Image 1 (tube, rainbow, N blue to C red):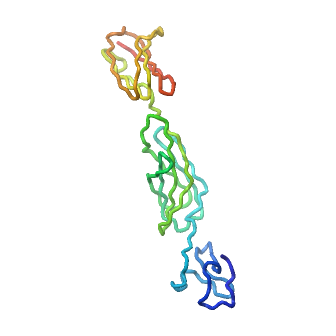
Image 2 (cartoon, rainbow, N blue to C red; image 1 turned 90 degrees about the horizontal axis):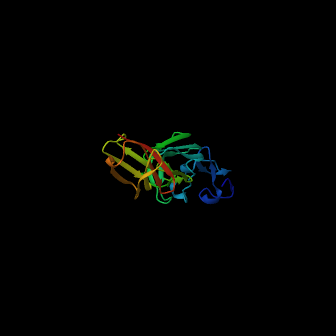
Image 3 (tube, rainbow, N blue to C red; image 1 turned 120 degrees about the vertical axis):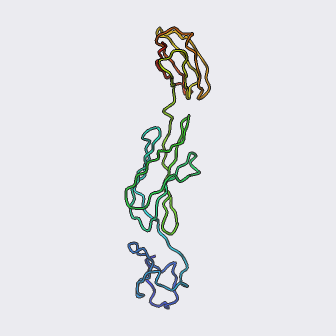
Length: 230
């Protein structure tokens, strides 16, 4: 690369591998020295021995950020975009098998993508993101992998109706044990649960008043919600 073409060489005898000159700004291969500099594609087809390509672009930055429990924003900046067709946004839950979840056309040089279709999870989940950069000739390069940790913010207890009269329905996502406690702090009911168990409790057995429902989560965290029985 960037070697002078020998003056003693015949017009038709030269080694493309070692005596070629790459012009980055013009994106072509040519020959220098006493031989006239010409674009590589202007030479006859039979002398081509290799196909030379450059990376489609240079990635200056690539970040991912969890905005809410169901939105991830991806930002990246590029430079030196040469013959780039588009960029595929890819996601994986195991870091190995990636699925394309979006596509943006190459416009240079700042990009944003919102992933608002996150998988449902009842446990902590790591999402892996990468960029698949596709050149106009179909060649591809990949960014480094960026991660976000997804936690279901809806874990806890949901009670309805509240206030209650004859019965209450309790949704206990991610809870392993449930307590109903009166306003004096006395436990009036205790129930072991399985993940995502929904239960119905008849309230005739309780006196009218204010109660608290406490859930013990699988990770040991405690969540509490007020209940009114009329």
